[in-house]
Length: 173
Image (tube, rainbow, N blue to C red; front, side, top):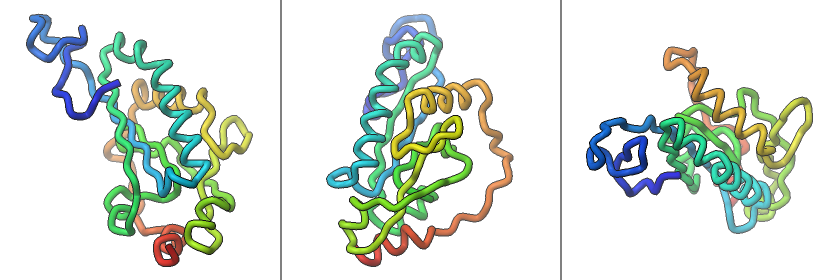
């Protein structure tokens, strides 16, 4: 996994251009977007599962020629929600695409306690089962899908609107 402060790397692991093989890695950007990591158990467990998953498959992706870049993005304002087209907390995007096509949510006590009102956070549905954190196989499959069947840049994109749930979180916080 890449430290986002380092420059591009060659597929062999050396700094680009320093080894002589001139094979640049393909960037695989994974964004972890969240409302709160201090209290929210869903955000904390999703972060942990994502990090463990990337540790497990990181060497494989590196060998396959990918440079994995994990960005953790704290959505701490409505402006940031708009900037990142944030629909639910937590969110994982691979190369800018949410790994979940249809957002499912349920009441999150932790985030509700933060703002003094009910707040819904993301549920992860995988193989017909609903989870409050994404299972590792779901994450692995989402990453591999984006590598081998990349989402079209020409896909129909619905206009973004901040969900009422997110507006309420920031209004009451």
